Image (cartoon, rainbow, N blue to C red; front, side):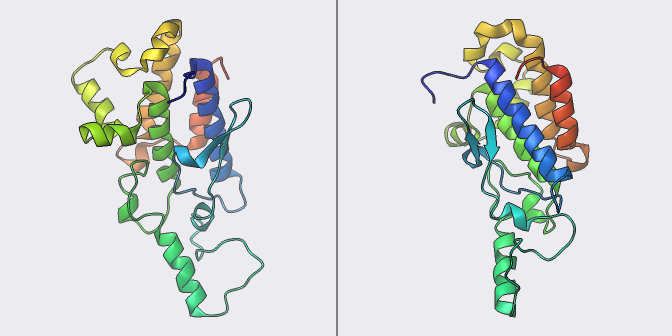
Length: 211
């Protein structure tokens, strides 16, 4: 963990930047790509803490246009061996499932943008709670989505869920709860009920006055 924990305004800025980046990837990029492997290690932060989404090597293979998997390249496949290699790379997106991947991802061969929405929701929960889903899994054998659901089932107050560092900024509690609710929508177990990333970006812009 950082020696200087991020204040709420910076966390919101990161959340907004990620949402807008994914919204562009999903709606305005040439093939309306699916990243397919969004996780904290694939997010780089600039000098002003602005986020950059990286590791599109496999993500570019996962487009929802129903085309054959393949990177945009000047090279044209000349034999079946190269095509099989591309297909194997595409399969890496769905197997094995990481803690940031949507629960339905390993069961489906056709990538969906709703996978990225789920992964974004997990990262958003980490920003709000200050907890890592990987650490939670190693210490309590549950991922962050399950942990948050348990807190809700036990009717714990929001102050027990939010990162303790943010308790000193509880004048922003209403905004924090609003962002928390967006995260819960993103990690809905039913992919059809998850919002689009464009919708998420719009919701964050309307809800928050920071970042």
